[in-house]
Amino acid sequence: MGQGISCVRDGAREHALFRSVQNGELEIVNAMVDHDPSVLCRTTVHGNLFALHVAAVHDQIQVLSMLLDRSVNPDILNRHKQTPLMLAAMSGNISCVERLIQAGANILMFDSLHGRTCLHYAAYHGHLDCLQAILSAAHSSHIAYSWGFSRFVNIRDGSGATPLHLAARQGSAECIHILLSSGALVSASTCGYGSSCSYPGSTPLHLAARGGSLDCVRELLAWGGDRCQTDSSGKIPYTVALKHKHAACAALLNPSSPEPLVWPAPLKFISDLNPEARTLLEKALITANKDREKEILKDTMNSSPSSPVHSDFGATNDNSEASDIDICSICFEKICTIVVKDCGHQMCAQCMLILCCHNKPNAASTCSKSPLCPFCRSNISQLVVANFITDDGRDEEQELSPSKPRRSSRRSFNSEGGSSSFKSLSALSSFGRTGGRNSGRVAAECNEDLDKL
Ligand SMILES: [Zn+2]
Ligand SMILES: [Zn+2]
Image (tube, rainbow, N blue to C red; front, top):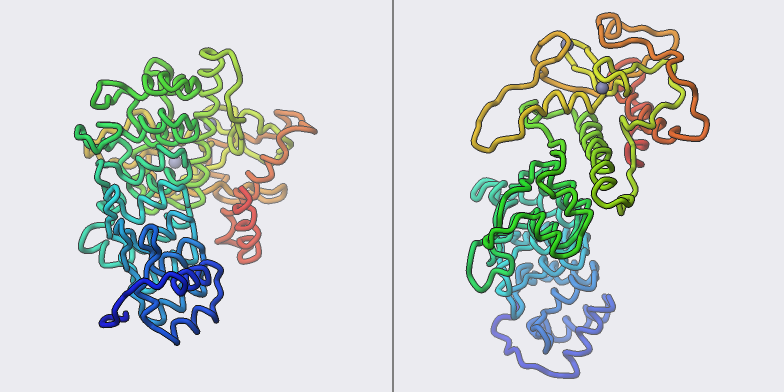
């Protein structure tokens, strides 16, 4: 762009250009560039931003698009070696992020401030959509081949912090979830020493403890975050939470409080776990941990948890009217929501999790056994969401299931409570039907219901 044209600063014109870019005045910017293409190699006085940076920061997608169409380098750098993509990810401007990626912006650039990439920026500032866009770009780009996708997910900044560390530090539980599902290492440590490192040897759990976000602590524990791992000064996350007066986090992080349920390693060996079943199991995991958490927090703090407990699935209050619903014959408490695909045996999501959870995941062991069905001992190769059977229909799946006492009048209808959570449960559960008699319409409705969860 504009090579050969001398880049001199011209205060007034420069100011007008950047103001117009910032305000999204497409035609004015267009006219200015037509009149004098050299304006495109001018920068703002502060921070040395080019027009493309300004458009990315202020979410001016049309101006940004126009500049890219005029062959402005998508990876143009400011004084801190920040690309427009980093600034768009920092500001949460998803359409600019997508457009820059589409124009070939390099997702593997490092700034000179902290040695961070656009993935760090999205994670640090908690912009889930930008994070996902960058991750899917990493999946499909040459980076996945040359660098490896999981190496990119665990990319370190100048202090050794991965995007997961930054999301934990800033309290973004949703970003943590996406990163962990994409292969982020839950127990990675930042660099152990050096003046550049603010929290030497910290794991994401240390940083979540410092930030005081219960949701982040929960999420990290559910993915196997180690409560006993020390940082460079010998502190465990519990100590860090206490020091920063985050009592609820400290209670969960206390190594002497009950172990949280962890997303089970055996489930990782079910290749391509059915997405609806995965969602159901993840929710059951969170619910189970929240039930446990209530006890921990009651004992240690004598007060209610700082955030309400949402019981979407399998919670103890799901005793709404459900004469055609099957009680789990392992716990005799909850509704069967998960079906082992090949043998058709059913149980509740929490029992399925507990079944897979007898061992904490151990990074050193490479045991790759898939879980066994507790009723027939066959290998579980796929799990699906239960299909609740309506009054007149017993289908073959039900005939061969010993795990299905009819629920009938076991509980009376609870008129005021629980019905909304039951509705979402049954909506989700009718997913099982989509492959059978009722197809498209049901699937569409279920997708809508799923989106609301
Ligand atoms: Zn159960
Ligand atoms: Zn079975």
